[in-house]
Length: 482
Image 1 (cartoon, one colour):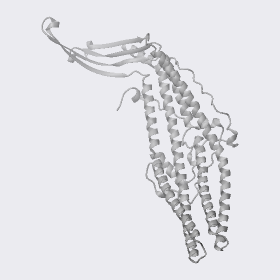
Image 2 (tube, one colour):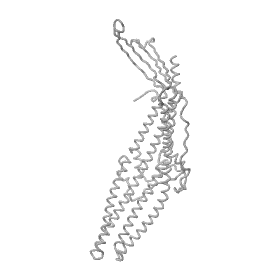
Image 3 (cartoon, helix red, strand yellow):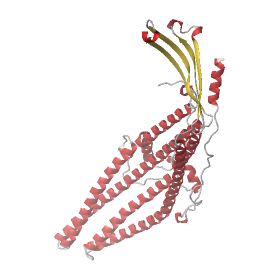
Image 4 (cartoon, one colour):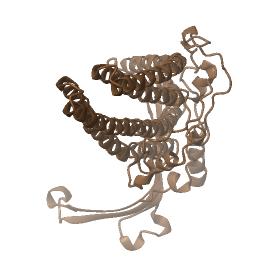
């Protein structure tokens, strides 16, 4: 008999009630179906980059990125946040099942003469029972909605971890490229300092021989001082870049992996697809949609709170006034207590809670749409800049070549006594600045490529779809282990 009602109780708990959450439909994307014309992008092939190694082609940079993915502190925080979300989902999922507890108790009470009317006595009672307490039967889907909310929060956290993964990869690439550019600028400043120092010596000898003027010597000294300032400035920037890269990597590495500024850092191409492809690839967009689903499920839990709550308490065991007789057949005892609670007067608490969940869903919807719009803007901006930067880089190369010719001709005319040193100084200053601008422009090109790589949601190694946590096993559902 007792076995029947225990089995029936457990079976009732496994029956999921109807869901009161609104039917979910993915909202339409609040962006255009095509990139704006200003982006100037006509190549609309497949843009999926599942492995960042197809984008980062430099082997030394690959090693640093792999180190960062193991030791970066932001990524560690994201991983532990995911573990917490998975555990919270497990906690909420366990609410669907009855908690079975074993209880052992003893009660000793002295009853005085004033109560007994005669001699005092000591009443003793011993019990051993096993059962469940306050198990809610989810007729209205409240627990199911809360479980769905916890699951969607977990999936949103998983996508956030992937987004952090992509961000770390992009940050390491950018830091590495910045270090390479600053070291190239430092090399250029040192070469210019050597050239200017040699020019100063030549001008000084010309002045000693009565060929050059004191103004020529002073101008040559100015160029040397400017180059010395640049060497000190770029040396400081290189040191700061190395420190920033060390924080991103999060562990020690061989300095030989760092760029020396004398070679080009090779990156792969990023093929840009349609905006719809971007929506499927970016983890921050998928994370925002999971948060929207969670808010939608929470409405179901708030609606279910208006309906009766049915809970069961049932135990079976032994109860005896004598410890020696505790496990005798006559000591068997059981308790079965069903409870139904119907909310009547809560003074607007349930209604306001429902309105709050609806407002939270509207907030999540706005955040989801805003995430899409910002992602669309990031890609469109990167596409618009890509072509302009390419044209600008070609023009800058031509400018560098023109300033180099001008400097070499001015220097030759000065050495032959045809022209004064001012024309040499002016040409050399323009040539030096143009070379600096070319290095900075190349860095801007590479940074734009990295921004496009990140904006398209590339760089994740693994499945593009977040997997739900594993189903809770017997240890999670039946017993608690520390």
